[in-house]
Length: 137
Image (cartoon, rainbow, N blue to C red; front, side, top):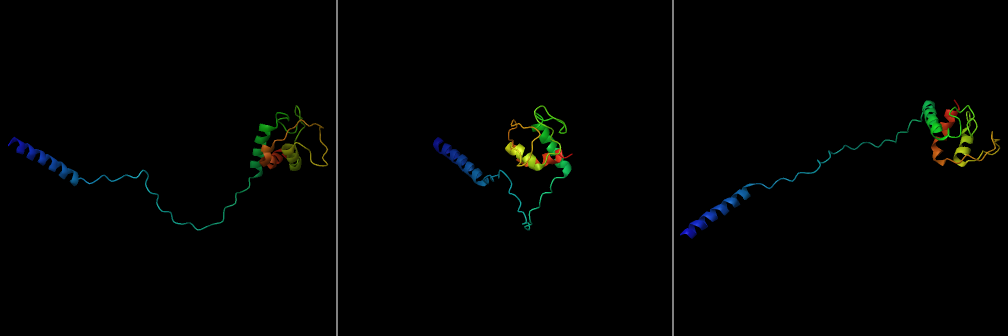
């Protein structure tokens, strides 16, 4: 008799456990990121053209380039002679391109100094116009 009471009790416990697990709903998985809301399609428009920099912006950039790259040999005041290089005020874009990018003079140009100490600085390719505007002031 002990055995049947124990079996009945054990059966009731197992049946109760099963009933509880069946009554519970499985947990709902949680998304790690919420889905992005759908975007309405935009009409295709031509790409906007960037506004060219003003002369003031070019001059400021040219000054920064000059002070960061040129004053080791040229004077911080481009109207004055430097330790190794001549004054640069008023230098043309053509001269700057030839000297800065290629370490040579434009054809037909008579240099202020006949030296070959200046090395090419090709990393300044996009700054020639800015330097010319700064040096024209």
